[in-house]
Image 1 (cartoon, helix red, strand yellow):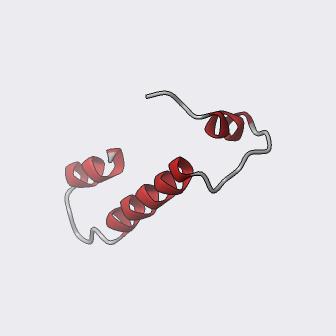
Image 2: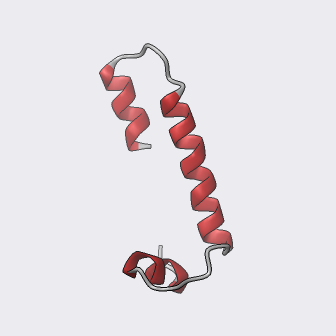
Image 3: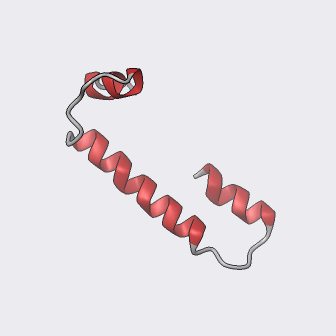
Length: 54
């Protein structure tokens, strides 16, 4: 998958438009991932590792 011009600018530390569909979707995906990880409760390290990699 090709990286958009805005994401390339972001990764280089340049000014970019933060509200493109791609970047909004990535932030949403990340929010759901860290919420699952933080709310995992008492699970094994192996299960935590699986959540971390997601």
